[in-house]
Image (cartoon, rainbow, N blue to C red; front, side, top):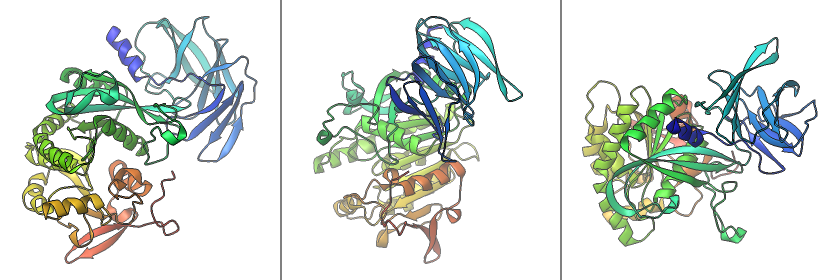
Length: 494
């Protein structure tokens, strides 16, 4: 029972209002509910229309939550009164008087069509919602201490939490704070779970962080993408949580992010959360963090090369664990920069015992990989293990230009005269899309690329049906990103 309670507390979004005014979002971000004191207005992002509630609210608002269908809004006041509202027309459907006890959360439970109240004494009260001629009838199912799945809970009014499961072969530092928990040294494989906050003010492609010039000297989940908590798991608990996410939470499929050179553990977790959120990924978000040194210098680059090579068997073991415990799910992977060295070699070394693809979509973003070795030695071993392999390359990538000069060999992520076009891979030239100085992070920081990956990963849209232009390279074809001519470079506006 204690384990179940802990899982519930770990998985539930909090819907309480800790400010006198603001707004919450529905789970799919299509409904905004604005509140101030005891006034509520509902805004539909699709129809661009406001709806005002047609009945006054008695008391001060403490909780607001939208159901998964975007049809119902539940409000609760300091008088422990729940009102159920019709979102479309703002009419009051039902009122529930609760017990006179402090409440810690309120949420819709999709599985048995009910609304659930969790009291601060860890008791739950569930009310079934029964539709009858466009009305909602309430039937109490009583008080209990049992687990109730809270996956259908709406977002917090100021930030949304994303679960990111992790695997890492970094050594622990002995520090307790999530950002400092893992360091730069090599160690054995370990597993765990992080909860990442995405602020409502989040812009697609960005990872909002504290800025000194804004007098922000510590993280705030209302303003920043941050790790709220970190839980270390053994392999058994990690796999159990994964299975629980599929069976009880209704999660579908997996997205694994593998970071590149000069990344710390906390950066990889935040990036995985941001990508999963921006892609509206419906399944489990994961990251694999190998022991990059986390800062740029020639010496650190050399050390990262050494550790990336040593990390290959650890990533392979992690992937095999995921494959074993997600047999009916599509496993998608995005690797960036030097992280591609770890990924492509790990996949090449996995033995495929069946005719089925091991992975769904494998995305190689700006890979700092020897292009010649990849084509001749690695790719032949990768074929047949992924439904599709997609390469994003750019001629603006200064980080890969520097790597080419260091190694005296073109990199897989370069385009222009160095572009790699080969059978078995969809090559996409993304030149001109990244306005940043290095031009190396376009895969996760530009709306155009995120939209393209979303169509690829979630909708399985072929390149010919996406916003890409076909280009000819001798007897082979590749694809070119179509830029918005009105803006030139990519715009991050969502």
